[in-house]
Image (cartoon, rainbow, N blue to C red):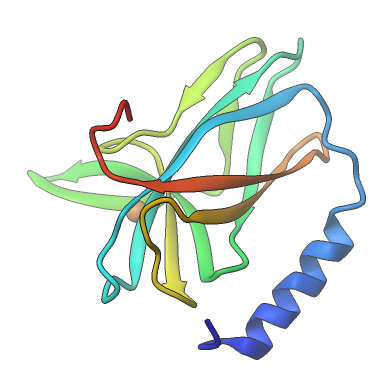
Length: 148
Ligand SMILES: [Cu+2]
C-alpha cells in the first residue's frame, strides 16, 4: 500500500481541494470496472460508461486515481497492423449521449499501482468534466466476460 506514500498524500490533498463542487446531475457513470490483473502488472485498464443527460455536450477533461501514479484516457489504434494506444486529452460526450469505454476501444489507463488489486476490490477514480463537474466513482475489480 505504501509504495508512494508522499505521492498519495499529495494526491489526496489535491483531490480534497477539488471535491467541494457538487456533482451535477448532467453526467453519470455506470458499469465502472477494472479487469483482475496479476500483481506484477504495472499498468492496466479501467472501463466505464458515461451518460450525458443534459442538453449540452460535455467533455471529460481529466481523470485521476489516488491509488495510481498516473491515469489517462487512451484510445486503441491500429498502426500498420500493430495494436497500439494513444492518450486522448479530451473525450466528448454528446448531449443526451452515451459513451462506453470497453475492452478493445477507448479505455482508462491506470499506471503505477500503489497496491495490487484483487477480485471484488474497488478502485477509486475521479473524473473531471468541462462544465466543472467532478465525479468520484469506484470501479469494481472483476473478471472479464462477466457481463462486461
Ligand atoms: Cu491504454
